Length: 492
Ligand SMILES: Cc1ncc(COP(=O)(O)O)c(C=O)c1O
Image (cartoon, rainbow, N blue to C red; front, side):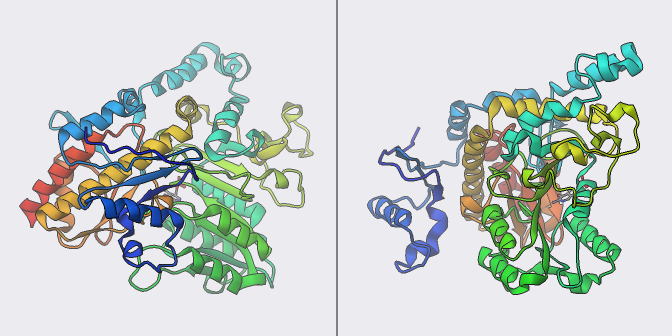
């Protein structure tokens, strides 16, 4: 092992990747040059770290390492040996290609199936067989309030009070329903702010919502653009746009992690800025839930929704989670599209005509629960509860940086032309590196797939790589590098 570990004193919990900050380092007057970076400079001046990735992990008591990565199998295996989450890999079912487990990079699209999930589904199937309708009340996990089992574990995943989260429907459906409550345009205040190239489902949703309310999408939808030649949206541009729209802004609704680039937005700061101009602020957390640290309650987010089939491994097209800030729970002025599962549970089966909602986010429920689809989601949140977001995020950062290092190494070895378009600052990315294949293109993607690397292709020329910490190994990253190198050499 060639880890260079150092100790010093404590500052914060940020992880700073030094070699990614070349421009900042090179310029002593760079505005982003913090005390941290100056300290990093000291390390760099004293060492030749040109082929390495370094971290400074500032904690309140210590600064750990820097760590030098190596592009070889033994080193990757050593990282796996040190990985406290490595054994979770055995809890998942991997597809096989050429008789070997695949290297699975598409957990940001559909997570792998946890082995424990089948028992959760079988339980519901068995209860249905044995109890039929009585299963609603007399099964081990009664169906009528099955969703309440999610409150505690899910609240920890998204940083909420248990009463602020619920599970229901699917993601786009939930965002529509939440817009019923939180997009209430008036002639003066009718604009929606979103990111340019938002996930298409969100774009269609905005257009249809705006038209539903009688406005013109061209006037009402404002997109935050990337600057010429840049792949990611600058926070300062989001804030400036919010200020510019000002009183006319009714709603800010952005993807917390951009699906294409993997950019993580500063949810706290943007939410605060939206509130300053009197707008509601909601988040599409499809790529964020189970992936990044969220503090939805403390950040005063008004609402959010996410799917569970990506980082939370609940199965194809499965149920969505929702967050509604407690500040809104008793606001009966807000529209809600109601149904009997949102009715106060003490009264639900009295079948009375007056709607008196359940307290909290559960009051936004509409239909009888789809218990068979919630069962895999419950298996998943239980696994997250066992592990905790902190441990996941720690591994996520290390394995993502290792993947980035491997990409740079291969780039040097074969003199390729691909470009990582995900921010290099660990604070602005999570479990995804998007790689623009300038030269190699689609044939390289196909080479990867036929050689057991499952990634996905996004037009015009991007592959997305998500080294999901729950089941990807460091050795996978090394192995991927070797396959990538062979693929580039074959298609170069
Ligand atoms: C960012 C984002 N928003 C919305 C959706 C749509 O999700 P659903 O089809 O579950 O409504 C997706 C799906 O991948 C997504 O990635």
